[in-house]
Image (tube, rainbow, N blue to C red; front, side, top):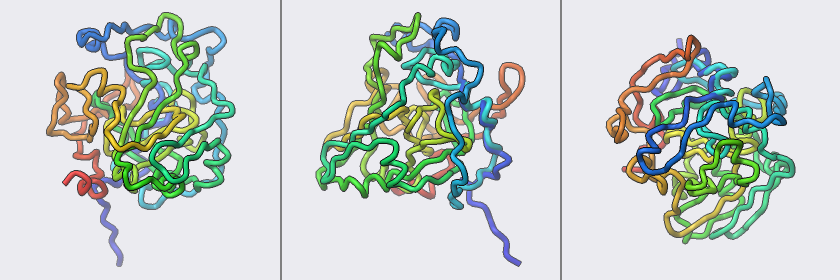
Length: 325
């Protein structure tokens, strides 16, 4: 008889965070005001315009059809976050300062989307969505998702590993870092009552070449079997499951290969609280709260929080610990 022993990072599908909870997060961190940012959170009503109101957080998405699930990332040790929760609990500060920005995010224009890849590469390219789908086979992966605010989900992403894009553009030996830039247009993304002009737009994030080449590093183009909703970073976003969620830039328009470490959004804004590396680490507290435990997002009045111990590297140490040895 063959007995299969799950690895520490594997979770059964029944434990994935429900889909809808993943799309609607808490209010913007009031403490940033104390840090000198001077940004006030706004209500959902204040963030949305009449033309963008909708009662369906997955409006505009389409089914992905029969895509294969990567067997190495098919299970985790907790339930999937319900889709209806995951699509209404989000940080996307371009569209507002609270977690209920999904209506405002419908203003994001995704037609004729392009992703420019430039910098220290042999083959600079500009991809459209058809290019990405044709070149890079889409698969599904169930990953843990851990926010620096100490809440967590389990999400079934669809997309392709970042290493495939690396292979296509062929970075030069001088390329040590990669900068990812999100879409930003102040006339589109700054909704009524939300004018965070003091923030270092556009949103940027960064990885080392070795991190981007890791098997876990992923470009998501879908979630819960459908194309990405806008509030989740349509049409393409980063998913780096061993790092805190702010490392996953949404709605990517540019990828640049660099020799020097790039400035990134949160690390520039509050460097003492948001490091460049930002690996999930229960032993390293945030300056204002512990990271030793995480609260799994779930159902219930004002949401139900299942408190669990935080796993080092979010449970993916077998894949990434050697990057930091």
